[in-house]
Amino acid sequence: MSSYVDATSGAVDHCQLMAQQQPDLAADYYKIASSCKEKLWHQLTLTILDLVSKPTTTLRSTPEGTNSYLALYDKVVLSIDTKLNPLSLARIASYVAASLTAKTSDEKDTTAAKAVLENLLANKKDTLGTPATIFVQSKLSLLSLNADDKTKLDQIKTIVKSNGELLKEMIDARDTSESAIVHSAHYEMAMTYYKVVGPPESFYDQAMSFLNYAPLLETTDDAKTAYYHQLAVDLCLAALTGEGVYNLGQVVSTPVLAMLANTPESWLVDMLKACAKGQVVEFNTLTTQYADAIAKQPALVHRATAVKEKLTLLALVNLVFEKHSSERTLGFQEVADRLHIDILQVEWVIMRALSLQLIEGSMDQVDQTVSVTWVLPRVLDTTELQALAGRFGEWAVKVSKTKDYMQEQTPTFA
Image (cartoon, rainbow, N blue to C red; front, side, top):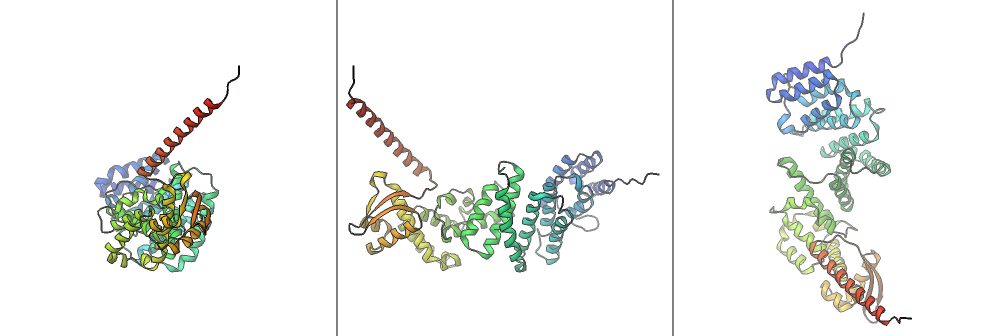
């Protein structure tokens, strides 16, 4: 006599019960049940992912009072988990874990959320594969960081470094959705870690990488809006105060900064743009105008000297960039006037710029000039691109005239 038991029977029964209890979600639950019966695992995966990715509209309680996502995971997903793509399974588990902390920071919910991911790592460590493992570890670490669990910082530090190296070694398939999902999960966790422990330049690097893989999309979700608003604030502060962060045009062009438009923090974007262009007068005006707001930002207060130095150096970089390549021998007085510093400070500023490799060239202390042969590459805005295009046009004209002159001066032989 056969002892075969259909593992999906309980899953189907659960879906049918939930369809009866939640009529507005009946279509989704019946679709999941149908996919289970017909063993359409890909369609089932897509339906579940779609359902659990919208907690504001689909997260409910079961008749027993259980979180509906957790019940779906326990009674349906785990019963057919061997049939699912490992990364899809990991994504479903992460949505379930997130739902347990979405509306409360209660420790019991956080513990339950961690348990979902910890059990997945423990029970499926041989079948998850590297991408899904990185994804789950990232989401689990993020839960600890958001719960302010300081006991996990050393462990998370190891995960940030080891998984970062693994991602670099993996074949670059950034244009695939699965690769983007894994990378964005890692970088979100990494930037959150560095926001907690510092330094700001490490947060900046990870945040920019996160935005490369998880670009900002239009959203009406209040939670997501608040999340990206805070990220924009943190990114501005990190760009201004981070050591070695000089290519500010990169962050200025990031769409996430638009989240600060018409908000009390919009001054941060104005300061960042002024610093990026080395506009000393405008930056100082903003500093005076928003002194009270700046005083409430510890990062700007504690690193005020570093920010001032960055502004001065970028003013020099912009001065050089605006010059034609044939006009890049600058007098100390011109530099002092542009940077709004005493002429006695010019030599130090130039030496500092040379040591940081913001410029290359040589300095003549006797004649008080600096000749620049190279300047830091940078992300250009529309106005700067138009100016550069104009220079290319002038260069093309000069080349054409030189060619004509050479042709005229070249003797012809019969």
